[in-house]
Image 1 (cartoon, rainbow, N blue to C red):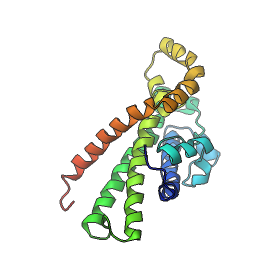
Image 2 (cartoon, one colour):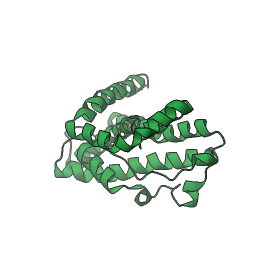
Image 3 (cartoon, rainbow, N blue to C red):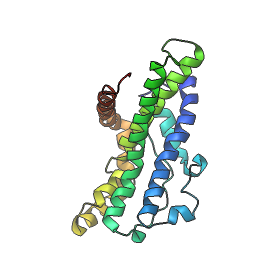
Length: 216
């Protein structure tokens, strides 16, 4: 679990605004691509973070590093292809955070390589390093958390897009228990034992890719 000192919490606020905005905008834009303009009509297809904050989900991100945003309104019946639309619109949010996390790490390495920031330097340099570290981690944590196949997380909708009508009906009967399951996983720490090792694996992939970039 990430630290909870005042500086860490303060730095997470702008990080939170950035990663949630990217996540929800990606959902809205992908839905628009598949023919559903619901989010666009309701003013959610934009980069205004205030439109995308969920109080409880935002608090979870501040405290433990992963949580959720206010879901973008989507009507899958408007999709040109229901299953394909549901799948890609749901995946767009987590994928945007995984891509943004890599871009953040890449920019961080460029700044380090250029000597513009250093570890153990001035206070301002320390804050910039900490900011990038949290930006990278929370992007990864948010993506992995939302890929869990537990309603109403994105992973549940991705799974639903692959299920047959019979299995889909059974799965939807379990939705009523989903909040309790999610809370139980968080309180017991099981969620962390799932997400943190996966996050280390994703970061390893990032690092492996960056090794092939000259100068970094």
